[in-house]
Image 1 (spheres, rainbow, N blue to C red):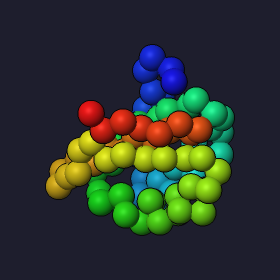
Image 2: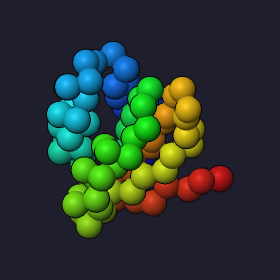
Image 3: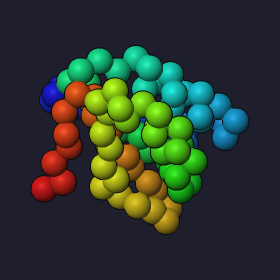
Length: 83
């Protein structure tokens, strides 16, 4: 796992671009990669898009669950500890 995950701050993008940016980031992941998604909305719609790729070794953990800021840590090829 990298020392610092790549940060994708979706708040910097228009609402209509957020799903595309999220999915492009997922597609670029390789085993051992980790990235942090920051959003100002409930991430459930984005996470629904993640379900089909979970079989490919992606895991996620939500360390901050709103209501103003949501953070989702996504890892490829290894589980995320919530300790």
